[in-house]
Length: 255
Image (cartoon, one colour):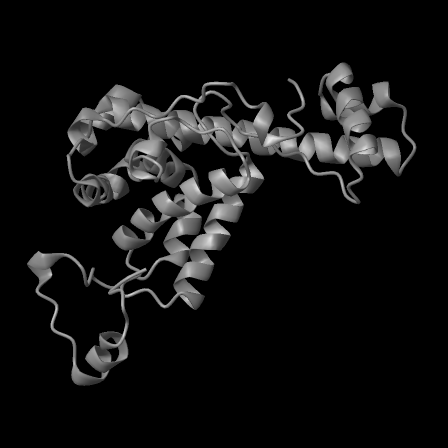
């Protein structure tokens, strides 16, 4: 384990998640919509694999989903669990050494972490100028562009977009599409390395989005509106007069 003190120190070429064949579409909204239609099945199957120790291939068959997307969800949840466990251990160990004056070797043994890595964390924190030590990095450095804390910042930005930006529609579909642009802009502003494919349309890819949603599904569900999408043409949305007046004056129909 190594310390990545800045996001720029992630691998030079950050790989992107490959989109499952069954979810591929030339239309971004359609690809997101396809994923959302099976998300509850993927989550249920993943719970059966992780909590009940069921066979992954059998659960994919039982729930009528591809093994590849279930494997992706299960892998992400395992990595996230490991990361959160390490986060607790390192933060507790650093606190024990710096504030409770424990010997580094004993703190490492107590929290079952590598002594050398703990030393590196303490040295980094001592030189960082930060007031509080926080264990923060990507929990999958090859496939995740942002650190865990940065991913939470993206969710905060999404929440601000919904509450302060007054979007035309903040359903789950539209919110996830907006997240593509939020992620790209955040990476640009913070000078974080991201997959080159993001530059094509100045936004993150649907493959990245699905991987992000799999990790933060519960938090995202609390942020998005449960209303039907106002933008999908097949819904033929017909607003009442008050709602029409509210949005008619906007130069842009949605943010």
